[in-house]
Length: 567
Image 1 (cartoon, rainbow, N blue to C red):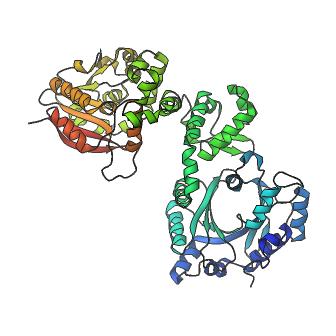
Image 2 (cartoon, one colour):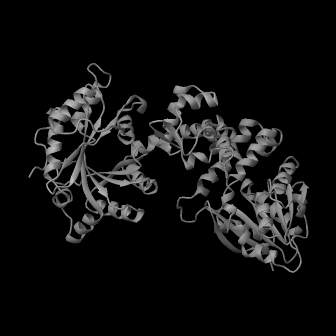
Image 3 (cartoon, rainbow, N blue to C red):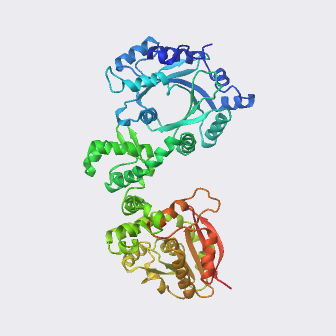
């Protein structure tokens, strides 16, 4: 039985490699191949693999001088030279990363001519093709790829893939020494691939394994790629160092309103898109290819199509994040460039850069202030559970109409949600003068402005006599002393029976990953505030004569803290 090509790969021509690959596929089936590939498999493990996956193909990369030469080699090996070719996004990007080249300059295609296995089953030889004409600048790349055979692998098709099955297969391969080695989602074929390096004791003659799952499984793929990057510290650091490119790419994508010119159902060519948004076609195509790697768009033969993630940057989509992209790629991006000032001095980089704090700066720049208010609304998913909070539902069911006071409530997004859910409640909103008009429009659109009192003022003017008080994403803007002052203003305004609900992101006590940790750096750099742990808020409340009596989780790593006047 053939197990592997015998000549040294570096000495073999593309034609010889292709013949050996065809012979390999014709000689093996799933039952015989798995024990060679994973020698330590137990009987139950082999049975489980046979139920969930099947040997589909062996793959190789060939680098012919042109397409006619490729067709001749295929015909010599008894393969169908007329099989259609499709773009290979995954291998193109792997080659670009490995050789530090622009993916746009690598025209990698996939052909899959059929081959019959020893069990009579139809399999394929997967041929990745990158034409390299004589004298091409890709000649050195071709020599290194022929010597390394980085893309040669054995592939198994996962039957009826679902996240649980895919995670189980990954775990089983890892148990027997296979290591994550990249992968990707190919929109041209609507398939997700997971690459592994074969175990050191593998006897199959191939150094890499592929699991192919029909459909989009990028959630499972993300964990697989993270595991791969963890074993590639240089690559991981390189990706981290280019994070600023991602921020600006998203911001420019939103600023030019490219998402508004695209569709999630139909692809559009870069030339047409460039004409629609006033951009250079070639540069826009490069931007879109970069965004395709991030999952914001998908590249198809006809051009680029917007994904659900990319659609969140449209101006007219519900819960649009366009304003957030413009803020993080605009004023806050500039101040993050001066993060060193914050780390050295403890002072906000924003104040150092713009000569004033961001509240005063935005108040003097109406367009920037409106953008900031819109960006705050982009995170309102964390508000979704709040209308059902026991304090709110109790107030909504009280015999006499109760009043909810939203302190520094922005444009009234949270207050509007609560009043809409509880028609008997009344509202009061305290905000800076330049925000009041926007809040009035927002509450009018929600159909509850008639039940609201809007007051322009500062924290010293918290309306008295309310039943429920809200401080949503307010305290993290300030240092501890200012937080105590704000809480004391609230405590003075609160009747003895009133409740205070505080919405903030909480720093984890165990050091686990959290959005709060990222926002802690953001707040210190741009605002002068900080994120805190629950026990820190409890101490601030106690200093103001209030007592923390409960907390509940909210989306986006946030929480709602429930406080009352201390006994």
